[in-house]
Image (cartoon, rainbow, N blue to C red; front, side, top):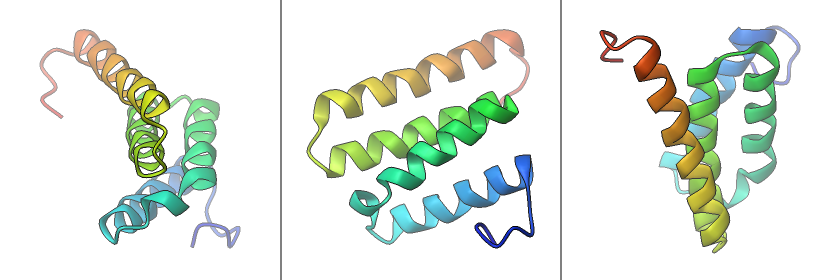
Length: 95
């Protein structure tokens, strides 16, 4: 569905995230570099902080698989920072 021009904006974002998570589960982390960067950009463009955090986590996994450990650590740190901000904004939201 992603890439077929059938879905847009936030729906495309979350469909892309789901596909990326599945591909990670299949051991395809090293091949997801461009996808992870595109997902992160889309998340920023639509203003979806939770999706951006997820994209940073995926990017961290990609960079780790590629042996880029410093960059991976930075991506994981950004994921954590975004999730902390979200938790501070809505402390009652366990999601």
